[in-house]
Structure formats: structure tokens, C-alpha cells
Length: 155
Length: 109
Image (cartoon, rainbow over all chains, first blue to last red; front, side, top):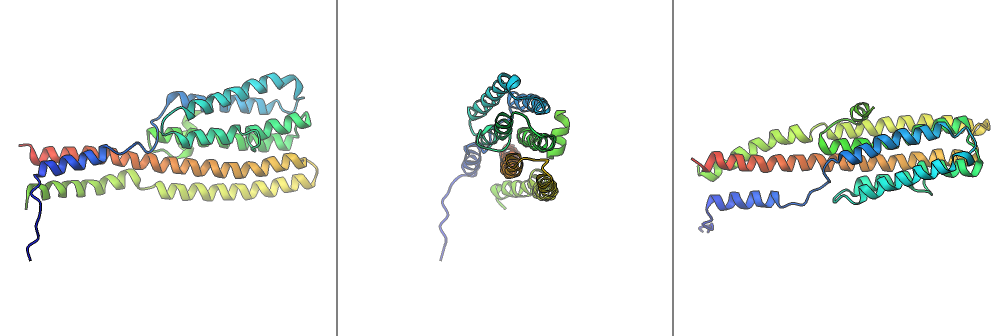
């Protein structure tokens, strides 16, 4: 039995293959310098605030609130970029008032009035690691890099 | 052998190199990262449990620190998913370039 093959010119098949590949939606957003700057600068600001949490909360309340607004703005910025759900979710986890990173830190400091040195040390590391994850993902949108290298380059 | 077979051969052999270049190392890096995180988390949990017992951490502080490990695990999973997506996207973009280059090389005199 003869197998019938449609007489499609080679150039048409090539064109279709290229079109098929090029037509796929982006899997992830492009690298954003603004998003990267948000992560690196807010990491520094939040860690500086954690260092002050051995003091009473009340005098720092306005600064803490202002920083919370900045983190929320960074989330909104990330959420507004197409195909950027992964990064936006990361910001949401960091800022979540019921969570255990920036939101958790503010909850402890405000409810206790001050925090213990042991907590300060532990939460500092957790928040630092959290921002490092956001930085690592943003850098990898541009080029493949280990998280350690991505974070080292940001400091 | 037809021109299209030539073209297809160039794309297939080129894509193998592309895959090695853009996708290799990703899985190993994810494994290393996860192993390091688990080791680090174990040490931290031991430390915080001791500090809770000694009264150096309040109950709320302990809860937030331990809960932070769960949040960090979620963040790491998102990072790994993003790194994989970015690597696959780079591979796809390079493959498009390869297909176009191979087509010009094969079909355009």
C-alpha cells in the first residue's frame, strides 16, 4: 500500500515550525531593573529596621508603616507586570500581615513593644533570605546564575 | 536526502547542544539549594527550640520564626519554578533562532 504524503513545500513547513515556536506566549516576564532595585533597596531598609527592634515600637511606628507601604508598592509593581505571577506571589508572601516574614516581624514588635535579641537575629536571617529569593529570581530572568552569585552581585 | 531532511538534521543536532547549554545544571542546582535549606532549617529549629526552653524567645516569637521557614520554603519553590521557566524560555528563543538560521542556510542559495 502506498502512503500518501501531502505535497507541502519545504519552505511552508519551515515557516509553520518557526511560527509555532515564535507564537508561544512568554513563560515568564522579562528582567526588570526597577523590580531588582525594589528588592535590593527594600532588603537593606527592612534589615535596618529589624536592627532597631530592640528599641520600643511606638517611636518607630510611622517609619514601619511607611516601609510597609513601600513593600506593598513593590508588590503592586510586580503584580502589574505581565507574566510575573511568580515574583508577585513572592512579594505577597513577604508582606503578608498574617505571614511570618515582614508581616510577622511587625506583628511581634507591635504587640510586644520590643523584641528579644534571639528573635531579632532569627527574623533578620529569615527576611534577608526572603529578599535573596526575590533577587535571585529577578536576576535569572536575565541570565542563568546561582542564587549565591546573584545575591553576591547585588551587595 | 531532501533539502528538508538536511534542514531537519541541522535543527536536531543544534538543539541538542542548545539543551545542554541552557538547561543542564538547573536540576543539580535546585537539588543543592534544597539540601542546603533543609540542613540550615534543621539547625535553626534546634537553636530556636533551645532558646524557647530557656525563655530567650517568647511563644509568639518562636511561632513567627518557625512559620518563617514555611514561608521561605514557598519562596524557594517559586524561585525554582521561575528559574526553570526562564531557562526553558531561553531555550525556546534560541531554538527559534536556530530554526531560522538553519532554514536560511539550507533553502536560500
